[in-house]
Amino acid sequence: NMHVAVHARAHQLDPQTQIFAADVLDGLSQPQKSLSPKYFYDDAGSELFVEITKLPEYYPTRTELGILRDRAGEIAALIPPNAAIVEFGAGATTKIRILLAAHKVAAYVPVDISGDFITAQAEGLRRDFPDLAVYPVAADFTEPFELPGALRELPKVGFFPGSTLGNFEPQEAAHFLASARGILGQGAQLIIGVDLEKDERLLVPAYDDSAGVTAKFNLNVLERINRELGGDLEVPSFRHRAIYNRDQHRIEMHLVSLREQNVRILGEDIAFRAGETIHTENSYKYSLPRFRALAQESGWTLKRSWTDADGLFSVHALEA
Ligand code: AVI
Image (cartoon, rainbow, N blue to C red):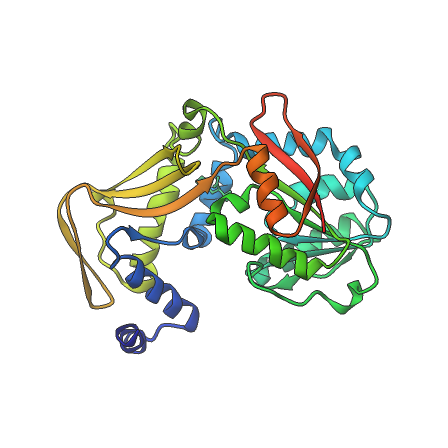
């Protein structure tokens, strides 16, 4: 996009921000305006997400932690001795610590786009698990990347908790699972957390909490556009909306323009009708059969599934 290149140079944006700029201008010029959910997670957004995970309405994090704690023994029994655990998109270490405490593994490889963050997390893990070799890898885990050479001889176990898979479109989810299989290799396993389809009366409040934290999280992407791209978006003229799209099995988050308005981002004018939305996130919810089919079409075999007593969330062991 010529325009973006010209504007980016004019505004002296670094390469990362240039990609953000191009994605924003592209997403906001579509008939259904959209922004990728990956742009939620700047420093402010990452902090807001941690707050979300503690909300009474946001059941996924707490429920998954419960399953991991209750089933740590059974999960650990599937992990071969001397294994290397590769965590895709490593965030807080709370979840991996449950597995590490239940089972002695040789190596832990947190993979995340933010190198600084995983380097800091690695420090703490080395201190608490002195025998564990930690090899942080700074990479976009949705694309193929190289595992550290030291892992060559070790059996590999992937770890992908948090239902992050749900933020991928179904074909992206299949692509990720197939790519993870390629990275981990034949005979590898994957422990993955997947949110389950359920009553709207539980789903919608999880994405539209009474304290308004999810609303802030969603609106923060507009603040980010203003901060990083010098936009002039009037954030209070947008409102958070979460709906459950039952046909597509997904929560959708949108930002609704409360009035007709024009905004200017990097010299481009963007017009909003009153009530027009920016689609900012999908969070797909799976049934067990639909997840099994997805795993199978991506080259994995579903070995075991665990859920909580209320059937809210699931953790699966897949084998390549
Ligand atoms: C990170 N991801 C799994 C969250 C979810 O539930 O889809 C992101 C989120 N969006 C709003 N609340 C939480």
